[in-house]
Length: 169
Image 1 (tube, rainbow, N blue to C red):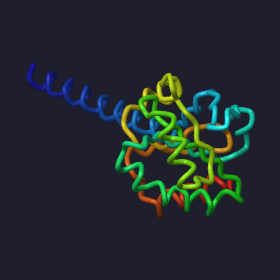
Image 2: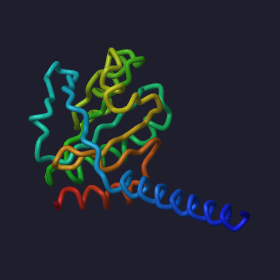
Image 3: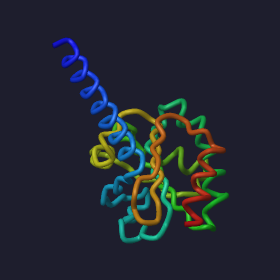
């Protein structure tokens, strides 16, 4: 009887390993489609999923009250300027709790070169998996799939390698 129990335990352990490996494989290799949302920038212009087709897109959820967001913003500007001519689009989405006049002031005084959108109702953050922590940045490939999510400041050399690969595809 003890041998039979050991065999069952070994079998169940083996199945568990296979299941964990399969889940890990599919969570890494399967690309999740980006939400089909429309952004509205500070000028009131719409940024539609159709206008982003065929482009690599970074969507950065941030706030003017977020120390890390403010710290990383100059490097985000450099990243955008480095890759914009290769087809990178960048949308900085201000969180719902961020006063629109603060966002507008920050974008104007820093002369942000990319589009800044307001998420006044929190719908965009909910669409992207209920973003609560800032900064949270998504990289979306030309087919509209999320290929990477960064929570916190990204390692910019790794981000640049990812963008170069996605832009070359």
